[in-house]
Amino acid sequence: MPTTSVRSTRSFASYTTTRLLVFAVVLPGSFSHISLEFSASSFDLSTGKTRSASPAVPIGEAEQGCEKQRHRVIPRWCYSIFLASKGYLSPMENSGVVKQTNGHLGVTEPIAWSGPTEYDLIKTQELEKYIEHVGLYESMEEAVSREEVPKKLEQIVKLWVKKVSRAKGFNEVSVQEANAKIFTFGSYRLGVHGPGEDINTLCVGPRQVTREEDFFTELHNMLFEMPQVTELHPIPDAYVPVMKFKLNGVSIYLLYAKLSLWVIPEDLDISHDSILQNVDEQSVRSLNQCKDTEQILRLVPNIQNFRTTLRCMRFWAKRRGVYSNVMGFLGGIDCALLVARICQLYPNALPSMLVSCFFRVYTQWRWPNPVMLCELQEGTLGLPMWDPRRNMRDRLHQMPIITPAYPCMNSSYNVSSSTLYVMMEEFRRGNQICEAMEASKADWDRLFEPFPFFEAYKNYLEIDMTAENDSDLRNWKGWVESRLCKLTLKIERHTFGMLQCHPCPRDFSDRSRPFHCCYFMGLQRKQGVAVEEGGQFDIRATVEEFKHSVSMYTLWKPGMEIRVSHVKRRNVPPFVFAGGV
Image 1 (cartoon, one colour):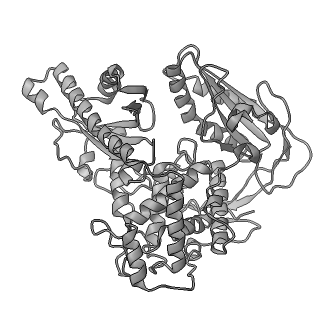
Image 2: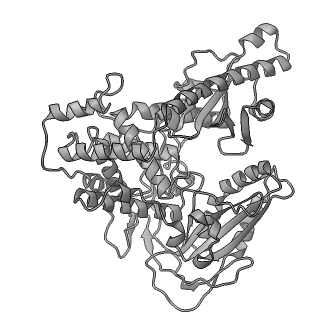
Image 3: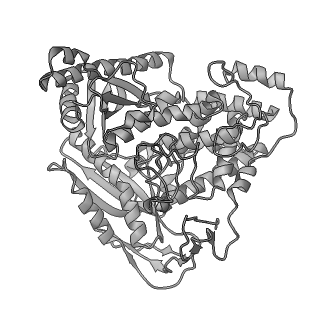
C-alpha cells in the first residue's frame, strides 16, 4: 500500500482510524449485502508519517526523481530549428530556451535547466500528431465562428446595462455612459480549448447594476427572448454564481462582477488589486477567475509548451474520469496550475518530457503540501484568503492547489480522501506507462485509454433524477450534481473513512424514460485492511440525509424527484454502455 502522509502547521496527537471488519451496504429498496473488507491505518499528524510503513519521500526527492536524462544529445542548433518550426519559439511570448540565472519562475529553483534530447524531440512529434489525430484542435471555421461570440455577448450586456440604468431613473447622459465589459478566462483564454467547448466569460458592470435583480432577472429575461440563445440555465446559488446558455450554438458560462464604479471604462484593467475594493464576495471570486488566468500565462517559462502539455493533461483527465471540479476531481484551473508548476520546474523541457514529469512528480507529491506558482500574496485589502496558518478549515483540505492572484484560494477545495485516492492511483498508472514508453513498451494510446468505470467495482450507487420537462430536468440535474461531492463526504464521515466512493463525472440517460438522467458512484472498501468476521454496514440514514438536503432546492418544482439505490456490477443498466451492451 502506498505511503500516505499528512502535514499540519500545528502539532496534533496521532490518531488511529477506527478498525472495521466486513460490512454490508444496505440502501433503500436494496438489502443485498456487499462484502467490504477494511483495515486500520495509523497516521501521526505531528510527523506527517504513516506508522508501520516506510517514510514518505520528501518532495525535493520526488521532484528530483523526474530528472532522468537520456543519452544521445543532439546539437542545440538542431533542436532550435525544430522548436521554431513547431511554434515553440515565439518572439512575442517566451524565447524558447530559458538560460539558467539567479532569477526563476516559481517558489523554488527549477529541477533541471537542460534542454530536450533527440528522444524528447521524437516523442514530442509523436504527441503532436496524436493530439491532432484525436481531434483536440478545432477547425478554422469553428475558430472564426467562436471568436465572434464574445463580441456579440458584449453588445448584449452593453444594451442590458443601459436598459437597467434607464429603468432606475438615470438621466440620458448617464444612460449613454453606462457600460459593461466582457472578459474571457479558462481554457479559451489560455488557448487550449477544443471543438465544442464552453467559453468562460465574465461580465463586469457598474455599481447600479445588481446581480440578484438585474443579472439573474433582467438579463436572464432578455436572453430568454432571443432566438439565438438556447438552453438558458441560471445557477444563482452556486459558489460562483453563473448563467449557462448557448449563443449561436456555442456554450457560454457567464459570471457577473459588480464594481464600485459608476462608469466602466472601455480600457478597464482588472489585473490590479485595487479593482477589488468595495466589491462583494461573489464579485471577488468572479474577477479572480480572469486574474488567475492572466497570472498563469505570466508565470510559465514557455507558453506554447505549456499549452500543448495542458491540452494533453486535460484530455488524459477526461479519458480517465478525473476531470470534474464539482465531483471532487480536477477542474480546468486545477489542471492548468499543476501543469504550470511542472513547466516552472523544467523550463526548457518539451511537452513529451513535461507529461512524463507531471506523473513522476505528482505520484510522489506529499499532499497536503500545496502546489503554488508563486508566494502567497498578502495584499492590502484584508480579503479572506487561503492560509492554513490562520484558518483551521484550510488545514483540512486534502489536495491544496493554490491560485496565484490575490486573494489566493484553494481551487481544489472539493477534493475528498476518496477522490484523492482515485487521482493518486491514476498518477501512478500514468507514471508507469511513461516509464514503459521510455523502454519502448507502451505508446500514447495506452496512456489515454478510457477508464473502465463499470468494470472497476463490484458495487455502485445509482442516483436517478426525473422532472416534468427538459428545462426542469436541466435545473434539477445541475443542482443534484453540485451536491454529489457532499454525498461522498457524508459516506466517508459516517463510515470513518472506511468506505471509499468514486463518482463518475459524466451523467447517463435512459432514453426509454422521458426527462430522466442518472449518476453512478463506485464503492469499495479502503485498501489494505485485514478482514475479520461479523458486522454489517448500513448507509440508509446517510442516503436519506443526502436526499433531504437535495430536496431543499430553492427552485424545486413538482415532478423533480431523486432516487438512490445500490446496484451490483452484474445489474448495471445496459443504457450506460455504448450501444446498450
